[in-house]
Length: 191
Image (cartoon, rainbow, N blue to C red; front, top):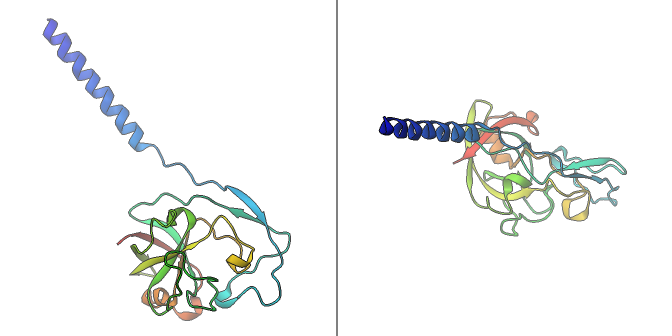
């Protein structure tokens, strides 16, 4: 009878441990909440490049900032935007990963601050799916979700926390008509 109680106790302990482990794994990831706000400043004359329908900061408007992005999964939902990575383009300064400008004719992207992970995603390839197609693109820059409305950020507002900012080569590869470039719901994953 003593062996039976011991075996039963061990079995019940095992069941409790498995149940607890499954509960932890089933918990939803922490949501990404705003980290603050910044007040827009009026750009000096000729200082905000509106190429690719880029938005310039509005004097006095409050813009939400984020230190995080939604959790990365096998099919992370994001929003594809259009960016120029060339010198003089609406991307502003050189890319964060290598302090260089890049041709818009290659599939490259910038990720929102949380996804960019303090340069941890530099030169990683991701697969972007949208418009019924997919393309592999390399991360070369950050779409800053923490700051904006200053010279460093071309007097543009902070990025939302779910942005995949892409060169025209990405948009072409996804087969999106040029008149529709600028905003597209997509999913992405590591390539």
